Length: 318
Image 1 (tube, helix red, strand yellow):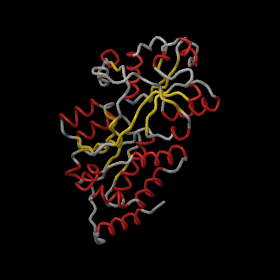
Image 2 (cartoon, rainbow, N blue to C red):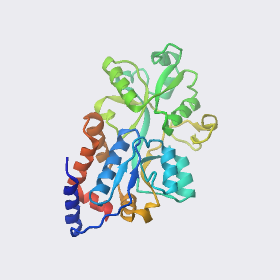
Image 3 (cartoon, one colour):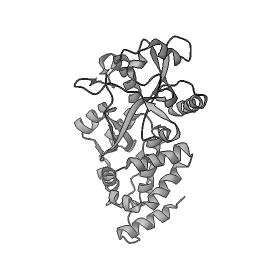
């Protein structure tokens, strides 16, 4: 693990600054979202703030509900300052309310991600398209509890994408044959490992970047192409399942780092950094591999990467 002092020295040399670099004392609170990519980004942001920026940041354990994080950023009271991995259009409600209408939340330039429903490739000969999922004999292969419906992993209970997939299955006319399994990501990963080891059927949502694509041979279920009006959902509505429709493949997601604009007064160097951070999907995937698959400490991964990539870090903070 690289010492914070080493990071500070590297930053000072790179920036041509003297040893009297002044720290801003406003502590920055970072979200604790539950997927590995968000965890990795949180630790990289923390390492930059605590190191080269000579300020203070903390990752708030349990600050994992996106709506709570967004409301905290809007308040600007320091209860929540950074939403590390804001997936759009999954969180359209947050974007409209706080970025567009209230103008209280800022963001960086996004990186791109994909999201699909998958099966292990050994199942792809029997199920590879949405039409295949409409076959009762296919759904029966995925029926784990014997209630006559196949199970699919839709995601964690706190994710808007979990609602999105339930809307999709309803819109595709699949809810008579299929039911969502809503469990934490870590629990699902254990199930996925067991299923693939035993070559059992398993249908699940996943996204890129993520380490499961490197660890397992999996195939995306083909969905209908996008057409005007195929995606019309309000996942924040009280009656989200009834009022929403989504009957086509998802477009590439735009994934942002969002931050409270109150930092522009409370900690201007950090606000500038967060507006300029530009994440490379290849780098994010490498962090995910190290943390998620190889079980390295996320703090070590982040601090090592920052220390070894000060040219990139300097482009974020200058």
